[in-house]
Amino acid sequence: MPALSSEANAKFTIIPTEKPLLISYCNLFYFVLKQTLLKYSNREYSFLDLKTTNSRRTFFGISSFQALAMFRRGLFYNYLSIYLRHFLGLSVTETTLFATLPMIANVVFQTFVWGSISDRFQLRRTLIVWGELLAGVGTVFIWYAHRLTDSQTWAGYIIIIGLTVVEIFWSMSNVGWSALISDIYKEGDRGKVQGQLSSIGGLGRVIGVWIGGLMYDGLSMKYMGWGFYEGALFFIAAAVMALSIIPMYYVPEGGVNYLLKNEPNHTNPVKENDYFRTFVIFIIGLVFLNFGKNSVAVIQTQYLVLESGFNVTSRALSYIVNTQSVAMILTGLAAGWIDRRLGSKYALLLGSFTAIMYLVIIGVSLSLTMIVLSNFIAGFSEVIIMVSSYSFVSILIPPEKRGNLFAIFNATYFLSWGLAGTLIAGPIVDWLLIIGKPEVFSYQMSFIAAAGITFIGLVFLGYLTFSSAEKRIGENK
Image 1 (cartoon, rainbow, N blue to C red):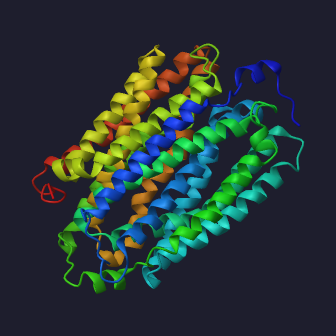
Image 2 (cartoon, rainbow, N blue to C red; image 1 turned 180 degrees about the vertical axis):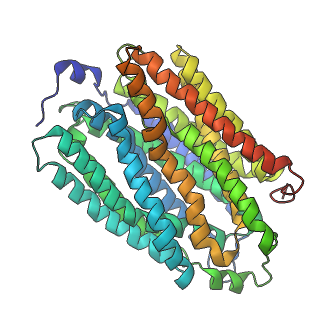
């Protein structure tokens, strides 16, 4: 086992979550599930496939998949940054590579391989199933490979390279998922469905973060980093990927033929020669928006555990992270209503503005209470942006081009999780540390820079909203 200082071990002590907190999570899960089922039992949602597929069966499939996917991400990625930085000893910029390189691979293969295949053969569910299965197998091999070397640095880079290869398969799943939701649901229902999926996914994330915290040090009975080094977190993540395939068989394949069969009078609200210009402006705005707010996603947990700063324990860290998850759950219940009430573009402006609020608060505040508040705002913003941007772009993109153009839409999100951290947040922190600035100040400046970049995205989206040439799309539905 690679050596870990007693000081670092004490710093990351994980205390098992108490039963009352777990019970409250279960109660929250019951509440959201009950509200969701009541909405569907009252036929608030109109499915395209009511005549051919049971709507509850379809929603059960996609919601179960979403919950398992978010469980796996909360379990794995929230602690991987700490493992790479404090256990394997990589620099701040190097730790961002575990998101950057995989996301580049994801975008390249979504855009140039899987998106074209999806459109050519009109495959949606098939890509999701095979993507998750192959990624699960690859995850087990990553753990095995990173144990073959005695060098902690090489072990870290093996994980980064391994995740890059695995992301090629996950990109199959990503492009299939985006196109499938638009194929199955009518234009007016997509925002509401995405909101409900965000709530259920948030519940999965809460449980994943909690279990990940317990597994990171082996239920407080092992050393810090045990969950990754001995493989428990790799194995659980791989098993969840395999399990997530099962509910997808409750979902139709999708594709343009499925759409035309169930909605024969479907027409695109934007003229063929107009939609691409609007799409380009929209994508530019999303690039700045996502690159800004997500550039600090990898380093935020590192910032909160700094001894010179908040110095939170892993238990407190899990509470803070799950504050964002709870906000996502609660916001998801109302996100569809907000999207319909304001219109997709105005809702997107709301999400962008609150994203800037989150970054400014965490960048200037020295109060842990304000940090918790900023994370709640971040959860609200994340869901509103996710729902409204998807709702808008699903109207904009012609059905026959959903594979390729959704790959570009997804690229603005996936690349921002890694590339923005490597090019913006990581170098800012490392450079300020090199010239002798305090740790806390160095991290705070990266949050402020992220807020500035996010503001540029808000300007582009504001033009899209208020320009007379672009204003007609995405209004109140």
